[in-house]
Image 1 (cartoon, rainbow over the protein chains, first blue to last red):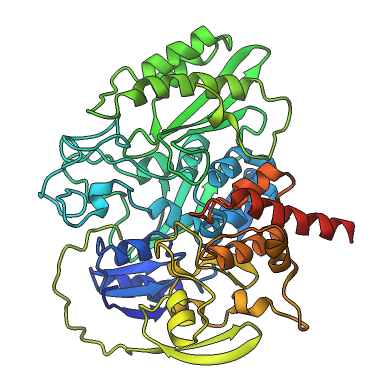
Image 2 (image 1 turned 90 degrees about the vertical axis):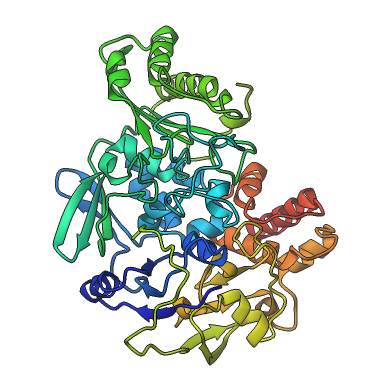
Length: 343
Length: 175
C-alpha cells in the first residue's frame, strides 16, 4: 500500500476540520472498499481520518414514526436490528443480499453510500477511466461492458452503482443527514448520488469536508408488500446484474402506491416516477406490471455485451411486483432463493 | 470525499504526523502492545509481526475469506482493516482456539468430516463458522451455505465443510 498518515478522530468537528484542510485526505470507517482501492492504487490518500470512535452507531426512533440509522452502525447490525427487520424488512433483505457476513460485520451504513463502482476499468490503473482520471477516456463503452449501465449513463462513463442497500433506501425514500464545515443539512436520497454527465469523477453531491452522520427512514416501510429481487451470475456473494426493490401499498386488488428502484443497471439507484404512477389506482395484474416495466426500460440503451439486461430488467420488475403483491402478511426473513428459479 | 486523488506526488506534510502508532490488542487472550505504521493491515500484523501464521493471506482483497478472524467476537476479513483501527480490540485467530489441552469442536469436526484438502482456507473457514454459530442466524443447511459464502475453498470441499458445521451445531443443540 502507498504510505499515508493517520489520525483517530475523537469528535466530529475536528474530523471535519482535518478533512477540509487537506484535499487528499479521506475518512475511513469500515474500510472494506477504501482499503481495497488503496491497495489497488486507485485512490492514493495522503491522510486517513479514522472516524470509528465517533458516537454515530446508534439505531433510534425519530419523530413521526421513522427510524434513524447511525452512519457507523454496521451493515450486519442494521440488517439484524429487530426494528429494521420488523418495520423495514425490504432494507434487511437488500443488505443481506450484498457482500459476505464478514464484510457486513465491518462495512458501515455511511460507507455503503460512499462505495465506488466495481467497473473493472475503474479498478485497473493500467487503463483509462474518466471516473478515476477525468478526461482519460472510457474503455468500457467499446470494451467489455457486460456489467455496465443501460440507464442514466453518459458518453464519459457507463459504470453502475454497486450497492444493494442503496436500492432499498431509494425505494424507502430515506434522508441522508450530513455535517460539514458550514453546518448540517439533509439530502433526499434521490439527490445524494449523481449521474455521471461529464463529471463522472463525482459520485455524490457531498461538499468538501462533509460527512454522513445518519440515514433517516420515513415511517412508511412497506412491510406488508415489498420485494428485493437480485439477479447475478451466482446466487451468493456477487454484485447485481439487475436488482429490484419494490414497495407497494395495496387495497383489495388495487395498487394505491408504487415504488420501484433498480440496482445494477444505472450509475445510481434508478427510479422512474412516471412509470410508477401508471400503476397507482390500477389492478395488480401482470399486464399492468408489464406496462410499468416497459415504461421503465423504454429509453434503456444497451452496449455490446449488456443488452440482455434490458429484457432481464423488464422481467425482474414484473416478477418483483408479483412477489410484493403475493406476500402473505409479514415476511420471511430467510434468503431469497428466487434468483435460482428460471427467469 | 469522493473527489478523486489523481495526483501521484505526495505532498510534504506541514504538520508532523507520527510514523507509527502504539496499538493495544488482546490477541488469543494475551494483552500486547505493538508499534505499527498506519498502512499495516491486521492480517499483516498477525502474520509478519506476531508470527501467527495460521491466518492465511489468500486474495488480500476481502473476497476469499482465508484471513477471517474474530474481532470482539465477530468474524471479519483481517486483510481489509488496518491494525491501528483495531486499537483496544480482542482478536481471536485459529491459534487461540486451543483450550484446556483440546482443539476446538469445530477443528475436530473438520477432521472427522474430512472438510479440507490443501488446508489453505481452513483456518478462515473455522473462524468464520464460529462467527456464524454465535450469530445464531443459520437454521438450515441452505442458511449455512449462504452464510459461509464469504469463504472460498478452491479444492471444493464445500459438502464436507457444511457437514462439519452441521455436526457441531447439532451437538450444541443436543447438549
